[in-house]
Image 1 (cartoon, rainbow, N blue to C red):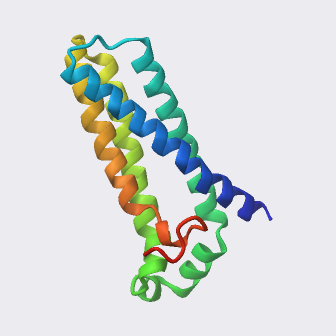
Image 2 (image 1 turned 90 degrees about the horizontal axis):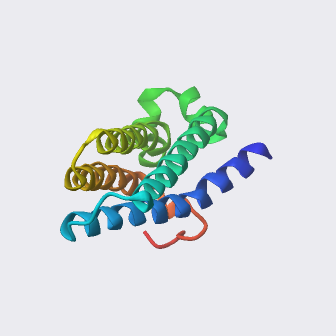
Length: 152
């Protein structure tokens, strides 16, 4: 019961994360190419993105440990689950890639806060948030979610 609830929250929260990431990236693009100051709205967008990113990471880590699919795959051993595309995705690819993406987004936030010039702040945010978003998009199991089943 708890697993299904956490999985549903993790799955639906992804939409909030995607919106926040796109919003922060669009603000960075507008700031960079519009020569705009890095203002309160940019900080708010970054703060929301970081909060959602870390929430998704925490839920994902909990899910990894309680998922019957992951536990079943681990029980079969790496020799078995590494040969299965779906099991490899949930056991290795999804978590590792997303941990790297979270790190990139966090590094981007730190580097943008430490920069003195607004253009550099926007540029760092754009690069790191963009790379993080691309990695996350690459590892979302789109075909296994109720909203996208059968679309692969």
